[in-house]
Image 1 (tube, chains in turn green, cyan):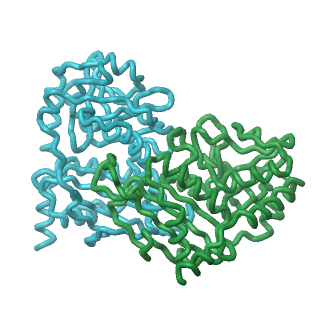
Image 2 (tube, chains in turn purple, orange):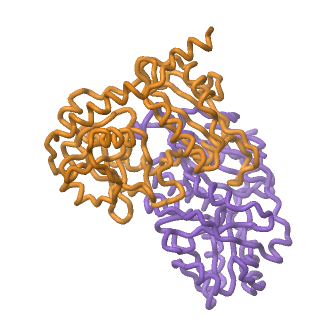
Length: 286
Length: 286
C-alpha cells in the first residue's frame, strides 16, 4: 500500500482531473528501491527520468528538488516512485507554452521476493497481448501502460511469476513488469528496444556488471524460439534485481553459473551506487 | 475551459492518485456534442463506451446512471465528456477482482468552428509520429493518448488544422483528433482500424448517412499517395461534424458535390438521433 505521497512537495493524495496524466497518460515515471535510507542507483534513475522527459518534451524537475521531496518521505526500506506529468490543461491534445509540470513522489512498502525465487527461479508464460510498435515511445517509461495492464490480466495462476510480451514480428520485447536478459554462447544480451518496450535502469546495471566481469554483452532481436534455446534467462527490474527463469512455457532451465557471478556483481554495485537520502532529510531538518 | 465535473455523481475536480487512469491511463472516454439540451447520438456513444469497456475488461456503468450524471451538469450547448477508469489500486499492473470503476462526467464550452471552415475546407499536414501498431487496443477510445499528444506537438502553424497519422507500413490511420473519410470513384471509405487508431462515432454516422443516400461505402487500407489521388477528403469527429480538406501537403482539393449531400444527411441524423437531457434533469428535480 502507498504510505505517503507528495504533489509538488506537499502531502496530497489527489490530483486535478485537468492533469494530463489523468486525461491522456501524458507523463513519465520511475520506480526505485530504497534500502537503509539510501536510493539504489539514484544517478541512473534520474538520468533516465531526464531522458524520458526530453523524449516527450516535458520539463524535468531538477535532481535537487526531487531529492528534497524524496527526503521528506523519510524512506528507510521502501519503494519510491516518481511521476512527472506534463501539467494541467483544459481540453484537447495541444500543449500551451510554459506549461508547468506536476511532480509526484510516493512511498510504498518493499514487495517481498522470497530468497527461494532467486535460488529456484520463476515460471514464465508468454502473453498474447503484443508490445505495441511505436518508435516515438520505445524505451521511454511513460504513463501509457494499458498494454501491460491487459497482458497482466491474461493469467491468474499464482505460480506464474511473469509474462513475456512479443512484438508483432514475434520478437521478445520484455516482461509485463520486467526486462529480460538472455545468456547464450557466453554472451549476455537483452532485446533491442527501438520500436517497443521500456528501457529499465536495472537491466543497464546488470549489463555494466557483466562487462566489469569480462562477459560479452549485446542488444539484439530475439525470437521466442531462440530464447528457448538459450543457456539461461533472467528477469530484471529495480525491485526484483536479477531473478532467474526456471520454466519458460515448459522449457526448463537449470541454475547457471553466471547467476552467482551476476548477482554478486549486482550486490557490489548496489552498495557502491546509492544515494543516502536520510542525511539529506537530516539536513533539511537542521 | 471545463465548467463542471462530477466524480461518481458528486461535484469534484480532483481524483485519487491511486486511480489507474492517472497511474497507467487505464480507462476509456467519449466526447459528445450537446445542443439545445440534447446529446447528439447518445445511443451510439453509449454503445461504443460499452464496447470499449468490454475490450479492456472494465465494468461499464449503466446508461441510466450516466444520463443521471450528465443531466446534473444541466448542459445546453456544450461538450460532454465521459471518462470511465478501471478504479483505484495500490501498486502494480495486476487488477483485483470486484474493482469498482470511477466514472467522471465533465462539461466544457463548445469549440467555435467558423462556418468558413466548412465552406473553404481546412489545411492538413502529415505527422512523423506514427500511429502505434497495437491490435489489442485498436479502435478503442482509451486513455493512452501520448502518441496523439506527440503528433499534435509537431506543428505550431495556426493555419494547419489537423495532422494525419500513418502506421509503420505507411497506411493512413486517422487525424490527431479526427477520423478520415475519403471519396474515390464514388465510393466513400475510411481506413480500417484493426491494428491502430480510434473508432469514432461520427465517422460511423457519416457512413450510415452515406448508405441511406445510396452511396457505396467501404473500410480499406489507404496509403498517403492513394488518398492524395482521391476526389475528396473529410475530417470528422463528434464536435466538428464533417469538415472538408482543401489542402493535404500541398495537394489541393476543390469542394465536392458530395459535401452538400453528406452534410445535409448529417444534419438530419443529428436532429433524429438525439437524447433530450433537459427533460431528465426536470424529472430528477421533480
